Amino acid sequence: MTRGEHMDIGLHQILMKVQKPARYTGGEYNQIVKDRNTVSQRIALCFPDTYEIGMSNLGMRILYGVFNECPDIWCERVFAPWRDMREQMRGRGIPLYGLESGDPISTFDIIAFSIGYEMAYTTVLDMIDLAGLPVKACDRDDSMPLICAGGTVCYNAEPMADFIDLFFIGEGEKLDLEVFRLYDECRRKGMRKTEFLKLAAGIQGVYVPSLYRVSYDGAGAVTAVTPEEGAPAVVKKRIVEDFDRSYFPARTIVPSTEIVHDRVVLELFRGCIRGCRFCQAGYVYRPVRAKKPDTLIRQGIAALSDSGYEEITLSSLSTSDYRNLFSLCDGLLDWCEPNHVSLSLPSLRADNFSVDLMERVQKVRKSGLTFAPEAGTQRLRDVINKNVREEDLLNSCRIAFEGGWNTLKLYFMLGLPTETDEDVVAIAELAERVFQVWKKSAANRNRGLRLTVSTSLFVPKPHTPFQWNGQISSEEYLRRVALLKSSLRSRAIVYNWHEAETSLVEAVLARGDRRIGGVIEKVWRKSGGLDSWSEFFSLDNWLSSMDEEGLDPAFFANRDIPEDEVLPWSMITAGVTADYLRKERRTAMEGRITPDCRKQCTGCGVNRCFSEVGCDE
Image (cartoon, rainbow, N blue to C red; front, side, top):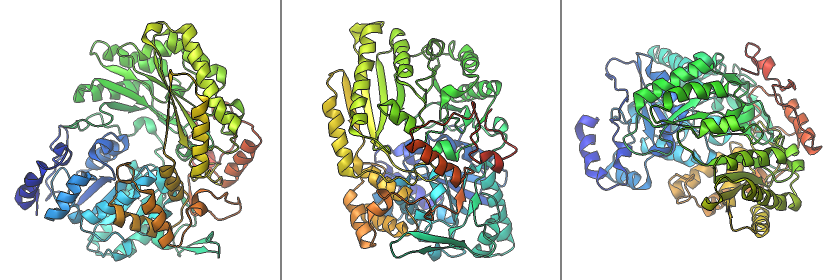
């Protein structure tokens, strides 16, 4: 069945019955279509969320371009259908298909998932099932596609170990292609999938869960992770060494319908110099590797010229830490201003926002500003190694208000290790001081101030110093939310908070072992996926499924893990040593900060793992 035959007829019959049918038709400007008869390998690049979310993901665009640069590979995009389309597809027997060809992905050689969020796990299962394939890896035979996954969450791959044949650990631009080439070679030689997986496990950055045996004690804690002969005891991530020469999708797909981030996204550097102790991305993406300003200017202008977008975003974990940010902005604005293209800079830090930077950001179009102090007191900011002082934040706010900004968002976390009620109330006090700064320095007070305070519940993540710290209970989080809400007295301050239920499940999945796979499957069968959307998330489904599997969510989410206990993800390393993470945790409990990587190398271990790459651009 191909798009030109029965599937096209079936699709036309249902597209008028669903929301946003352009999500499912393909045909966009710059999509890549190849002759299926001239390629040796077909890849389904799957994003376990809707088209609008997936097409906003820069990683998807990079991998799509990298794979399709290979003449013998045809990579197609696949996104999760919304519930209405899902029901229509199931009702009419239409399997999940590639957007470019309309061919069922069950006929492809490889299905590769890009997973950036734990709550997408049930959607991965739903997409495998929609493709007409068994969700468990052990039930798929050699005639079925190889199913792989990569992304930040795969640094703890265990919750999805039952469903995925092979995980990519690290950055996939070169790693993925190396695995694809090996798979093609093994298929041509008539080798079985199990033989291929044993060979693939020898490639740096490949984790094959079926080659590892996990042992538990009577309390349910992991006691050992034992690799089969030939599998590495520890899988080390892969990185792109020369980031300046890495692929950038200057000629990229222009969606036919509105997406979440409808703009050019320019990635300045990978990694982060800061070392915030709660931030998984800041640890697993080390070392810092940056592109040169001339490279970025050339790539940004090329992407804008080709796509016709009217906005370009400079993106990285901490954009304002880019050394050559001013010259980069000036170079881009020389082209953007006469072409009426706006320049936006998310991920700004409150300690290096300046008048010069402000003037560059607002030259074409002024948008709202967002700062993330994370905590209300200096004591707690030191615990998490945020390295932002209150005077830095207030000074940055003054600069912004004097420059005409009247929309500001402040992000905080509740439930951080060592947090007290005093820290919670201090968030309200800090917000009030920001409001007072606006009253004293606003360039135009007649417009009023829109000041939003947002909080989320701290989720302990693997490969961070706080991976051993338990999450506070949902009840305690809501108590702290109520305390903060009652402490905010100004009507000019709006308070938004993230629901505790989702964060509880996220913590279970983030720190879970492979026994959680049974829970994920049960929840998927009850809910049908899209658990990252509040419309479809049900805490009752997760709690009842945990109970049916004989597991306690508190064991995974709320328990402080002893530092000498074997962690479920101990067979995977991001380069940062466990001893360093333990040292950072102790430093946190003492309320001491660690300098950023530019000021002093603190010996995290990344330089030893990647000796050819420095920790700065």
